[in-house]
Length: 166
Image (cartoon, rainbow, N blue to C red; front, top):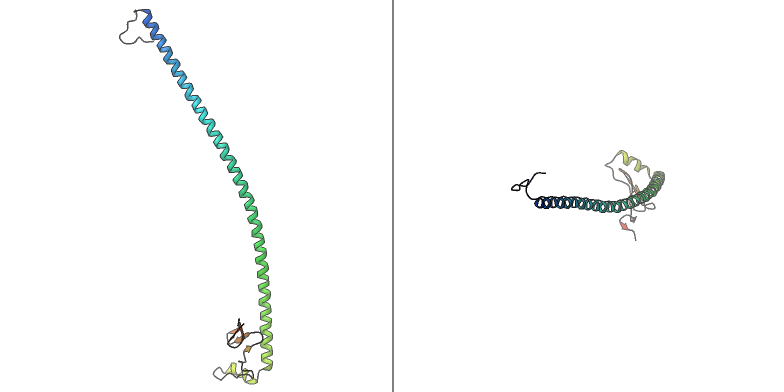
């Protein structure tokens, strides 16, 4: 080792011995500081591992919940699609019934209509005949369906011409 500045190499042995001891103490303290830093790093690493394990456990729990909720959502979706299909089917049936009733009503009206109503379609400017009940010939009060030139239309909420349903 190099001799510190201002010390002679051939000087007293006690100064060199003190210097060597001081150097040994400094080296041992540096080694202890290095070991302490390693221990601190290992402790921080262990603490981080524990936190990671806790967070991983939370994540696994959340993923399990997501899976359960996804299955529940899929079941509800299937139930909704089934109900929607059922409602669509009923709507188609009701539309078919409505069309049949309109056709039936129109057939009865044509059977009972005077011959002038057939001419009215050919001559739109001619006055429309009025039946004995005071209804327009294209009106079926029993079914509350009014059939006009634009086609048959339901008249909801009316029992007769202009009277609201109670």
